[in-house]
Every structure is written in structure tokens, then in C-alpha cells.
Length: 353
Ligand SMILES: Cc1cc2nc3c(=O)[nH]c(=O)nc-3n(C[C@H](O)[C@H](O)[C@H](O)COP(=O)(O)OP(=O)(O)OC[C@H]3O[C@@H](n4cnc5c(N)ncnc54)[C@H](O)[C@@H]3O)c2cc1C
Image (cartoon, rainbow, N blue to C red; front, side, top):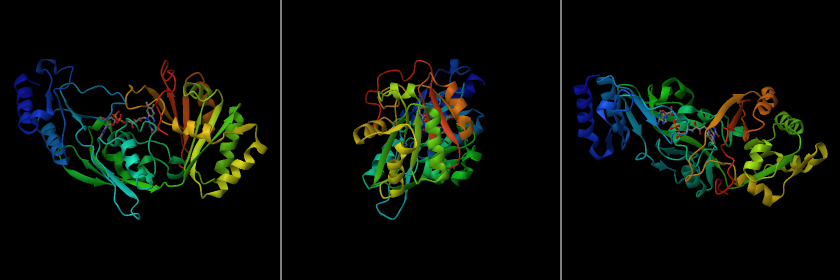
């Protein structure tokens, strides 16, 4: 694009955004974004989509940047640090919450906890991941054993389409309008499912052998044990978190679900495993976000969605790397494996209790 056009775009953006615009070098626009912009609301995003279409420049969106995508050369980079508002209804009967795309999952969940509620699902990157970033990439997280994939728990989302039209879409159709780094549609707010969370109780079980752990998971699935969350850590991840050197199976359930308590009581009779006591269990639960923490750079991780029969083979591929697997009611399992050299620092204040 000609330099005069690039300058014209910067002028148009500056007219509206002034201090919320960071222009980059016009001369470097072949390899770098032309500008970063901080919208304050949906109308600003609609305006940016309209400008991008009028001048045929790419638009890209960044949340916390965990997915590490390249910046668009000559494009406009949208940052959502000024759109972090959340809304939690006061009524006990309303099981939803709203959030703007820059809000952090953990901040939203903490707000809900003050009212005895919690998100139906959240990612283990919740201390840093933004609502917009995880919605755009979808996934499986804490709570997926009961509630499934993220998109099953989005009541609706407001999305700005290319050109600037604002549309409300259901969670299930979100994949059709977002993706491609924000080139397709940009999420400007979402209404998310919440749940009662006053009696959440964690549990954790240590295994020497993965085969026995996986047999227990099969048993859990077969009897449809009413857990809210179910995940496993390989020994490399247990060590990285300072939780010993075993495979760990852990999760959480509302304490009134007595079937779970009975299942845990019987478990040591059926397998060579050790059900952890309360103190150890709370340490395992408190480390569920490891190694993501607000004040440390987030490491890179490989993210794979597999079926349960594929799990043993995939876990053996990643056995030397700190790896976790999260189970979903959809029948899928999300494997997250930290890249070489990542997550080997001691388990400092990464988790929250
Ligand atoms: C240690 C670790 C743990 C993780 N745990 C989980 C987990 O439990 N479950 C899981 O599924 N994934 C997990 N992930 C993957 C990761 O958390 C998600 O991809 C993350 O939520 C991205 O959030 P972000 O704010 O960093 O988004 P970014 O990386 O900034 O963006 C991700 C993508 O979304 C687009 N985007 C961002 N905001 C918007 C918007 N408002 N509208 C449209 N598009 C947008 C971006 O352009 C980009 O393409 C984990 C990753 C790591 C490294």
C-alpha cells in the first residue's frame, strides 16, 4: 500500500482514538503492524472493522497472547486492555455472567465465588487468558467433565463482523464467525454459563502405573460418576509442581454427591493407588493453573484433542515433558504438554488455593 494511504489511515484512526492509538513506523509497515489500538467499547470495534474494510488493511486481535501469533504486517492490531468489564447478576437464581473480551477468566471466576457461584468451565491458563482469547480458540478446561467444551457454555456472544456489523451468535455457532486471528469476527462481549459452587470439594489419587489410572478413568466414565472436573498429571508434571513423582488423578465435585465419596472410599480396594489426604489434595488443587501466573511469562504448550483410546500412546510420546490431560463429557481429552525447558522452575506461587 502507498505511503500516503498508510498516513491517511493513521490520521483517520487518530481522529477517533488519539491517546488510545500507538502508531508504528509507516516505513516498516511491510513487516510490522501499522498501529495498535485500544478500543473502549463495541462501537469502537465496529469503527475499526469499517476502517479496515474501507482501506483493505488486515485487522488482528490480541488477548493475552498465549497462542503466540505473528502480528499482521501493515495491519491494525486491536488490544482489549480497556474492555475488561464484567457483570454478575445479584439474583441467586441467575446462572450466567457477562464479560468483555479483555477480562481475565480467573478475575471473573473470583467475582462469582464471592456470590457462591463459579464459571461452568474455565481454562487452566485462567490467571492470564482473556475471555476473548479462549472463546476464539474454544477448548476443554476445568469443569468440562460435567459441562463439556467451552462453546457449549456460551449462552451467546456479541461479535463484530468484517465491515462493522454487530451480531449476536450462540456459542455453538461462534466457530463459524470467529477464528483466523480475528480476521473473520471479533468478540466484543459474551454471556457465559455459571453454576452453584459453594460445596466444591477436590480429590486426588496417586498411581504408580498409568494403566491402573486409566482403568479408574474408564470405571468413572462407565458408572457416570457425577464429578465436576477430572484431570491427570504425568510424573514429569507432578515433579514440576512439587507434588511428588507419581501419576496423579484429580478433580472436584459438589460434596452432596455422595456417590463420589463412596467411590473414593472403595478405590484402594480395586487398585494399587493412594487416595491423598486433605492437605495434599488441596496442594494438588491449588496448583491447577501451574505454570500460568499473572507475574510470570506464560510458557508455550502443545495442545492436542484426543479420544480416550489414543491417550496411552499420546502420554507415552510426551512422557519426558510436564503434561496434563483434562477429560470432557464430550468424550474428548485435552492434552497440554509444556515445551522443552518450560515449567521446570519450582512450583512457586503459580496456583491459587
Ligand atoms: C499453560 C497453558 C495452559 C492452557 N490451558 C488450557 C486449557 O485448560 N484449555 C484450553 O482449551 N486451552 C488451554 N490453553 C490454551 C490457551 O489458554 C488458549 O489458547 C488461551 O485461552 C488464549 O487466550 P489469550 O487471551 O492468550 O488469547 P490470544 O493468544 O491473545 O489469542 C488467541 C486467538 O484468539 C484470537 N482472539 C483473541 N481475542 C479475540 C476476540 N475478542 N475476538 C476474536 N478473536 C480473538 C486471537 O487473534 C488469536 O487468534 C493453555 C495454554 C497454556 C500455555
